[in-house]
Structure formats: C-alpha cells, structure tokens
Length: 182
Image (cartoon, rainbow, N blue to C red; front, side, top):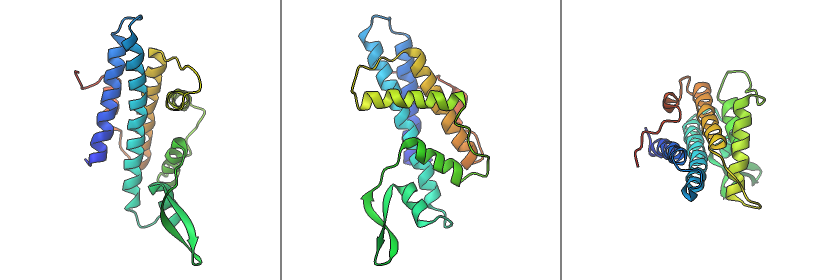
C-alpha cells in the first residue's frame, strides 16, 4: 500500500467518524453542522486521493497515449516544435470526468450507467461539496444527505476497483462504520 493509498483510506475513515459524531450530536448542537461539513469534505478528499492513486498506477503502463498520460497526470499537452509534449503546467479535469475516463479507458466492462441512484447521490453530494468549497449561498446539510453522499463515494470507489483492478474496494465491507475512535 502506497502513501497515497494510506492517506485516501485515512481520509475516508475520518469522514465516516465525523458522520458518526454528527449522528450522536443533539439536533440543536452547533457541532453537528461542523461534523457534517467535515464528513462531506473529507469523503470527497478521499475520493480524489483514490482517483489520483488509480491514475498513478495507470501511468506505469506503456500502452497509453500522450494525451491519456496528460489526463492521468493532470498536465498540459501542447504542440512544441511540431510534436505533442507534456508540459509542466497543471491541466485540471473535473472529478467526474477523470473518474469516467479511468472507468472507460482501463476497463473492459460496459459503460457505466449514469442514471443509477449511486451516480445521482454522488452528483448531489458533489453539488453540496462544491457549495461548501465555493459558497454563494447558505448550504444546509443533513445527516441523511451526507450519509447518502459518503455511501455513494464508497460505491463509486468500489466500482472503480472492480473495473480497473478486478477486485472489490477493501473498505467497502465496513460500510459507514469508522475504525477510528476519536
């Protein structure tokens, strides 16, 4: 297990622990909102770390094009002296686009159906996370919406593991139960 894999797993466990803390807070407790904010943000940090780890694994392959290498490494690809080259500049891609690229390019499975409830819960959670990260209005989180978002993230990571590595995501069996006790 690499350092990024350890971090990704730790972030997910922290997310689940903050959700547990929110569930055990009184409804009037200001801490509940803070726990929910932390749980949602850490879950998405974990997802991004898992995606980065999967991308790093695929960068070791020799059968990927320069443009695919650019997507995986989030680097610009530009024409220099008549040929495409990776540049040092950052080229960011949307989280869901990068995820779908990994699923599509490195899997022999059929295309993922984005009309599934899991994808819907993931997208709803992403909108909430984006609302917290780039606030333009008040965002109200509930235990149920954060629970659904974290469950969807775990399921999305599991789908990626099954498609790319042909095995289940090890943390999926723990569901929303954290291994942490802080």
